[in-house]
Length: 379
Ligand SMILES: [Zn+2]
Image (cartoon, rainbow, N blue to C red; front, side):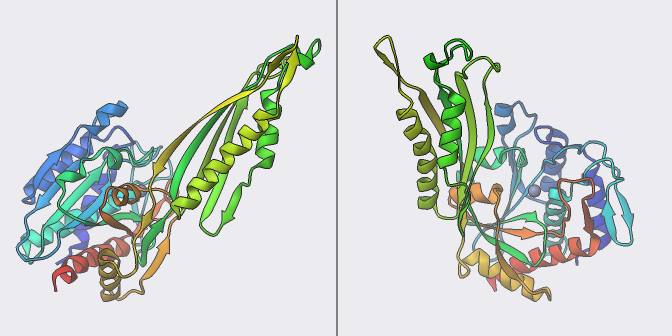
């Protein structure tokens, strides 16, 4: 039986453990110990070390006692800032912070639900297929845990990330994202004495950006120039400008097309920037770095994790909704690594703000949903 008091007590304990991104050691140790106590084979990596963090991913596997597909449940251990010294308050069935920090229900609500379900499986001797758990580090600052985790050690081909708000929602689509860094090199010269001997990187950038399609490109695709930096002084024709841009799309071909369009926009202006000094042709230069920040999520409504989540939410007495997300989360990375993963809500609200809160009844409902997922997976 799901025990509401036990969930709340453990949740309060978890949110009081400081675990801002890259400082997850205390909570990682705690969770590894818990998983062992609950009968799981546990292993941890030291993925955080590569990013000057003090912890890695925590993984566990509970042997199945019925036939069925292995199921992976995922939550992240880190929180955003200010996340140290959380003092949780419960009022009328709502848990919040004292207003000086975030609460950390993102994503400790996911963790607490997973622990509760594991406890019930063991205590009540409930039949279940093989269950795998992945608690990641540094999700909030770049999905580092999911990116570095060795998924070859996992058996599951289907996963559920407990890391969203509305408990009726099943996120089955999320965009692919490229970050695009473009350096534009002009030619510096004195702006008051010999401006004709310079090529302004700022002017090149301005014209290029002006030629870019940005914002909402179509129903699946967006693009943005988020940072522009450059120039040294009002009297110097600018020699360097850096543009930090991104493009997102649910369709990988459209993403690549948009990315190319933005780079081409710069190259076209660069090509026409030629000046002649002492019969020597000079031209601006540019170079770009494109990084695939994360792959998208594209789970069909009739694929196993989507069907399972839908039925489980329905069985809990709620009306399930398939949704798409505009952002990136661990689930994006896991899908990219071949584990079909959907994102479920836990009731966390106003996340990443000091007004973050969660209703106790939603924590309990989420545990019911996860319990139903496990039961329905082999029935
Ligand atoms: Zn989260």
